[in-house]
Image 1 (cartoon, rainbow, N blue to C red):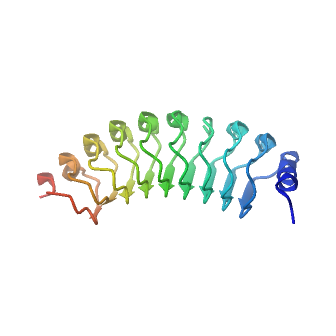
Image 2: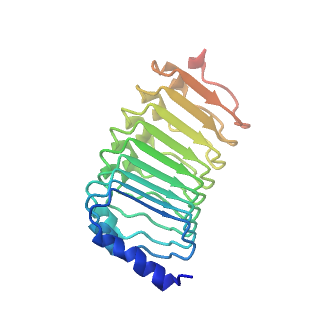
Image 3: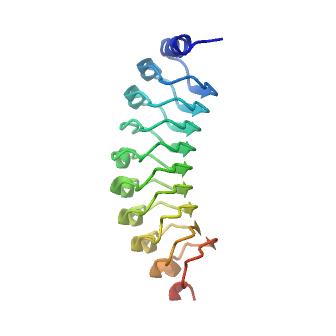
Length: 227
């Protein structure tokens, strides 16, 4: 059986394989760190880290991967932070990382990001204002973020957003009024038990073709614009 030290050494060797385009690290229960040499995988496009419950940190060198377009992090229960520089990403998935407290404040620098999914990040309290700088973002999913209390008004600046799903965020009581400015929004799914109101302008979204409201027990009324 590999000790954590031996496993870390083996993972560290991947930096010598600069031709890797996809790297999957799965079900390594004792893995606590990834080596900085991961940043030497200059051809890497797809990185998935799954089922590593003791992984606490990702190396900053991941930000050097200029061809990395897809990053998926699933079931890393002790992970607390993400690297700041991930500017080439198009897809970012973060699932079941309950100790992750926030997305990077530099989120807006991910200028090519098209899809952002966060599920089961129980300690998220807010999303950075820089979210509104993601002008190519098409899909945004915020699910199971139990401590999330607010969404930034800059949400309304997501000029390419087509799908927005916000569910199982029990501390979220309102949505930003700017949501009514999402002129490309096609699908809106909302399911937050303590949500009290929807933005009045949501019914004026000309491109909206699917609206689902579920389990919003505190919702007192629907906007008149939906009539």
